[in-house]
Length: 258
Image (cartoon, rainbow, N blue to C red; front, side, top):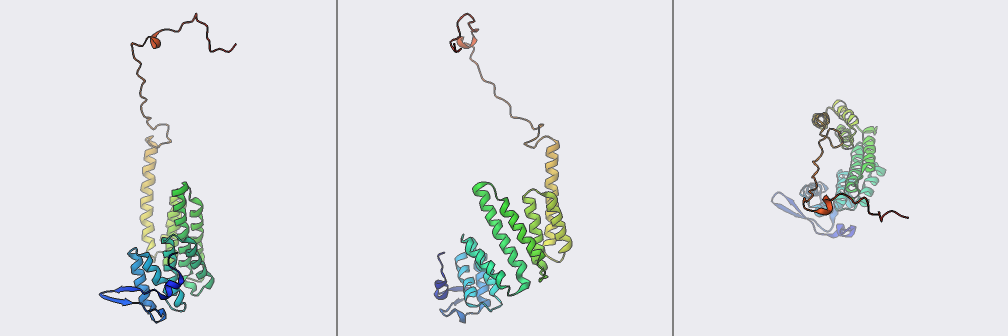
């Protein structure tokens, strides 16, 4: 990683806040972690992961007792992922679980870990064409988010339930996906993911109906009714005596072994 802890402690940071520029001091403990988090979030949204990394790192390493600490840690783990240092990102999230500072935030942390496995699955698909194992692990962590008893974070748990549906749909387990989406609608109706789940159900049913229509019409690749491409006939010249002449049955066949 190009940005070590030492750099986090001393690097001069520029944060944009409206028309003002706030230059971070070397003594980072004097910074307002709320303002640092706002700017780090803005940098991350813009795709400037290096500056976002610095801001989140200042909160994570220098303000462990602040209200912004968990958000800073989650942001830092996301930056590690964007900078392709997945091991460090995992470490930050697992440390949060071990610390368990605010139990109500645990479902969100599980969701972040699941997201790492989703990224890993996507990379595996690109490299090997196979990523189902990591998708299964992601589903496991989304279930941990839902089942965690010491939090009533409806938004985080609704998101996890929605993602279980999305991953099952990706794995073409459509009945499981449908059940997961319906649970997101019914059990987490107060979350923003309830309406999203309804939209996914509509889209999935349209897709399945289209596939069924194709199957009935014999248009699917594995259907025996699927029209096959025409075979191009081989042109035989009509003036080639070697091709047109009948075989000489009187000559010995030299290809037969004696």
